[in-house]
Image (cartoon, rainbow, N blue to C red; front, side):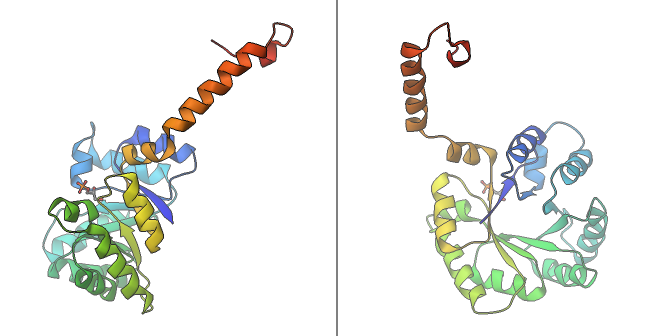
Length: 224
Ligand code: G3P
């Protein structure tokens, strides 16, 4: 399963990219609004920093506007994927952009039928929003399950990108279902790395080593 970061924060992107954990990035207007600086410059920097697919979202809601924005965003780099909202106008834009070899990620997917139609229109990615379904008392992961099952029956060139991920259990569930990608807020990725027993175990190893280390073995001493 591929891991994307769901952020426009350059420090987080650099840190996790340096660990080799980042297969791509997803952004949206909300995430860009949280960062200081010019959004266009931030988008350009992300596209340069990470080799994998970078989703940049349009803010127009009409077909012509989305098409024009999609064309402009795609010029940021070859790895740009244009993020388009799941609307009728959006699906038209997806088809037209595909005809121009511009990849799209259809966002704000809340039903399996929406995912099916986005794939049929020619999207490269569909983004079901899991946490927001959980928020209203539905089981978001059931949607992922349905989409993965449906896509397995056909030859769509469309990947399931699980979005609105809120905690590490979402990641495990998505992986068990065979979702292609999860896009993670940096804090969820941080939680996946750490475990209290790892911290306790490491502290104990260091403490025990201190008991047997000597000044004649300076390389083996443990800093206090
Ligand atoms: O990728 C979509 C994501 O940014 C939305 O997450 O937590 O606002 O539902 P959330």
